[in-house]
Image (cartoon, rainbow, N blue to C red; front, side, top):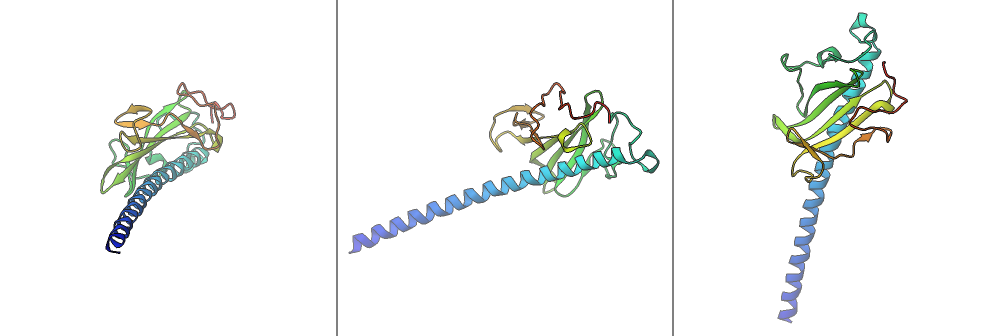
Length: 186
């Protein structure tokens, strides 16, 4: 009877250990997905701000009369920045307009995670090419090793090559081709 009890005790310890390990793994995976979702939500909010700024008349601080988005800044959209580089910083993320695309018609914005006052490992690039969700593209970024090392590297971040249109438009590529439903000037 003593051997059987010892065997059951060892089996119980092994099963409990496996359950704890899988629970920790599941928690880590969910935490990472939550961080990614947080960056996507922040980037989508900034994209909405770009569209709202463009729709607002210039007399009240908007860009309705502006044909292209070249020179668009975070300050113009109402964000308080550091004043030098145009970097907006909140408790959970930092954002800046990296450049404009398609002859100045599209805004390219980086939103990067902040953890304990420092730049984190997760980021999102968002490109806004027009006033509808058909013309907004999100690209997930991460530091090498966080989600793997596939894709290509840009400033220490890896991009997953599978850029996602909010409404799953398939015609994006890095040469600036966007869906035909997006206006050439808006």
